[in-house]
Length: 178
Image (cartoon, one colour):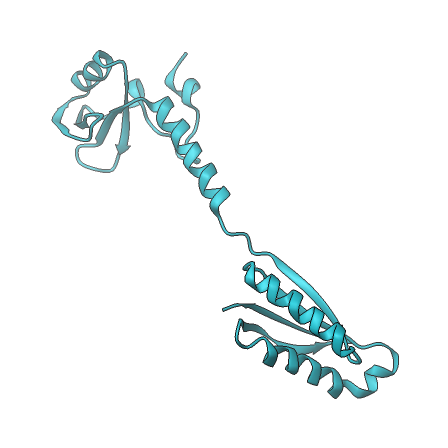
């Protein structure tokens, strides 16, 4: 089984290992990071084989190319684990939506405001949507006042990321945590 079959591709660029390295001389690094110096490819391969490790070309464009003696299978496994952990720790942008109407009652308004504060405390963004129904369309200024009031009441914990604007029969805006 060749090294290519054993290790496959590395992010679209093929990593040259062991017998696939074509340079006559290489600068060799030992597993602990110290330099073994510039040597022929045959000597570098012999050094790697003595330690039961692989010779991996890490900088092919250098003069001479830089190779490192390492356990390539273990390196690939650890790299995959690091990538998996990075994906797990990546912050997810969650957008919650809270809908209002122009004639929202005070108690409903306070409950929705409390929910928005909770979403913002969790680090989520909140999309504000105020929908106009029927005759509410004739008095859009009332809806605009409600959205302005929401933004003013949340100014201490939120920042406006997208100004509220009228789109069709609704006013949409986006706020995020400070």
